[in-house]
Length: 343
Length: 259
Ligand code: SF4
Ligand code: SF4
Ligand code: SF4
Ligand code: SF4
Ligand code: SF4
Image (tube, rainbow over all chains, first blue to last red; front, side, top):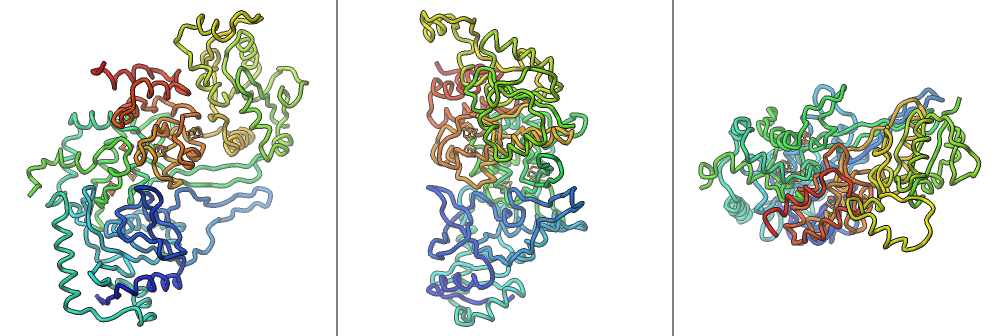
């Protein structure tokens, strides 16, 4: 891997330059407590110390609602709505979210690739950014706290700048085309990088891993913990919509008055809603709120074999954005047996 | 042949009909449907056989009841339009209270030539085939319902809460962030989370999520944890949700071991 350094005073110039590679999206503060990624005009607005965004980066690849195609019966035509996607840059993705994108790749780019996702994915440049965990983060337990693939550049904070890992040909291109921004990595940068990583590991709330959690979960599905927790649940879907790996969508055909024209749209769905499990004949795979509640736990903890991780990357969004204060990490800890894992 | 429709208003503010009258594509609608009855738009028209009857308002008078039954008899399909028709509306908030007393308080000694009732949703009197929620419904939903009927199909009714749309819009959650009494989690989606988008807590105007999935109990617990009183929570949830089955019980449960 190639390593370079960006000196602290050059970071804003670097962000300015990123605009040469496409529209720049980065985290900004949108309210008292929350952050989201927005298109950036003034790079001074970018929040470097954000913890999580209320909309995960998946929104750039699977928009919350999109029109797929139109049908025109008068012209006997079917028109795809997806235009060519212009290149764009997502700045400041944390490790867990980059792994989350790779999980989405596994779902959307299998033997029947989703063209809408694929085109956007090819156009997106990913610039990672190091982070320090808060009490909601448990990427360490998921083994997704450090990414080695899936970004173009990854920036690690140093006391006087950033150590950048170059992760793709596009990343090399950015470095090569902007020699005035980058410089050699020195011994003290390596030391600082190491110290940062050590400090970061110490900051995680729990140590160990969640490797066997799926099995314990399957074995404890009758536990009364799930009665109590699902009772508290609002069925609001915030947990899935803010989850960077939740990928369920619903599709709807919208005719125009007269029925000669129409469009097909798709939009984010959630297994916390009744119709998610509803099938022909009025049968429902998940009749009760408890079924739906547990479904998310099972889904997120199942094994994504191409990466060897679970579908959950431990970002903590589902807990942070749950209006009912239901703690996903804590619930898993409870069934896992806290003492086994806590150091 | 064009599909025949009737648009009717029982007791309500007539806002749903006004919304229908103001949709941009109203001329397209008039071209594609034969509107045989619409009191708001024309004083002509008798209640006669139609393919679809759209009914706004709740049943508050004997006259409403008779009219509704006549509409039902003459319609292949009946669509309850808006919160009054679907849930009883704001006027349905007095459900379960001392009706005689409230009547006296409201009307005093004035001469009323009909017997008033407590506002109740259409389904209490007749069979309802579809619900078009809103207070009033959104233009795109009115069009969607009309268009699907028009092609011989039917609309897919939303069964999930406003929160879903709030998340899709990317608005900050004001319930989490500011502890505001947002009813988004129990209110049926369709407005694109209009109020949270303006930093205003949802008051539930579109009515509870259908199919028994409006979890007022869980939301009451959440509100309680934020320090809201039982009385306040109850009042707020009752504005549009008074006639939701077991609302009282759901709130009581949360405050059970208190008083
Ligand atoms: S399940 Fe929760 S912690 Fe796991 S990836 Fe999704 S939002 Fe993050
Ligand atoms: S089933 Fe539920 S938890 Fe799994 S991806 Fe879909 S919305 Fe997320
Ligand atoms: S965010 Fe919380 S309350 Fe809402 S569906 Fe998820 S677990 Fe339930
Ligand atoms: S602001 Fe209201 S509607 Fe939006 S997510 Fe929060 S509770 Fe739901
Ligand atoms: S956010 Fe709530 S109160 Fe506002 S329009 Fe929607 S349903 Fe009505």
